[in-house]
Length: 430
Image (cartoon, rainbow, N blue to C red; front, side, top):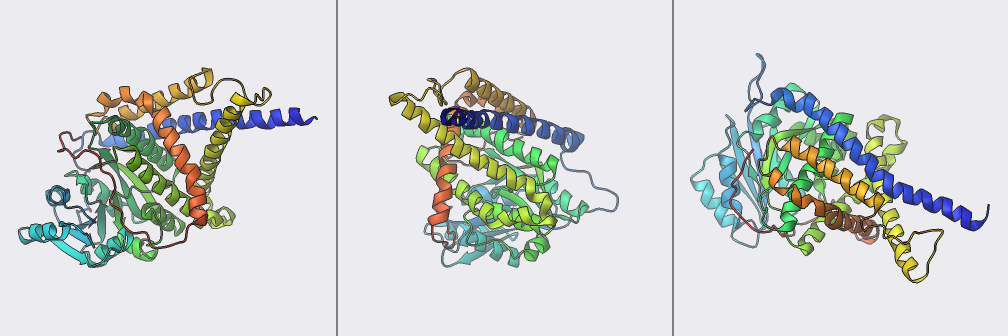
């Protein structure tokens, strides 16, 4: 076999992987999400809160809200938390060394609200240690953790606690974050992304049995389980991914509850979006490196699928970059047996198929989350830009994350105030 023929075989394998892998995963997510809906969502479609069995009652719950420079959002976030319809709860706001007026606002709110407790950390310790401080001071066994800019739905706690009281093996229940800021193109696209990517993947993963990560912005925890695994890790960029793997490696179950809604702000600038997605990607890489050995442990077979999928996704990102680079080189020095003249990212027959599959995925996700989010239909038109804008950003952050994690010094992950886009009042709820 001559070298050119061998290279052609290898190259066509790479091209096939670049094309078929996302098509296969999209199909898997759609099927898994639909299965999850009919099994876990449709039976409760007409329920405001989950019905209890005769021997069940609602136990107390603690809502933990770590805050860093949340002066603009604190009043709204705390007010929503204090107004949940759950029968017995407390709210613990943790000020993690904020440099603005967050502490003063929290203390002022606590004067008139006996259910609100304020924990003040004099120096910025990071979200992981902030959550641990709140958990240690929590009065109740069940913890509902939200971010300092999140607006929790009034029945969110009911839907989370249902899993804990009914299934003793459940350690965490991740909720369903919905985007509040929808005025810019980036905001509109993220509305669909959180349904078609975040929500759909969690549904599909839960159908298979395991979840790669809970959502740091809204997750419920069993305190005993978190204590069992040593709480959140302060040196991980994404403490939510890390705690998910720690719990599942120790035999605990993690679930997804789409009716546990919370309304959040997201970046609406390219620089803010890049920083956010790079942190997510680096956190994912950290967790892969930390847990890679599960592939060689017979007692961790339940996590093999998640690990392999993440590694294949990383391989796809590097393969896509390689294809793009070869295409660029081919513009100046044609390599006819390796790369056709067409761009690997501009519309042609194959890319249109991928875009079509992407839009079908968006349509299914709109149907799924449209039960809880009335604004999804208005944003469907904008999703045609997702493959061009967000695929490229997520692709580049995935490729950048590996060397940054490999060559960065491991330190405590501390707060950095993110870009939260255009602040606006919440005017739609599921």
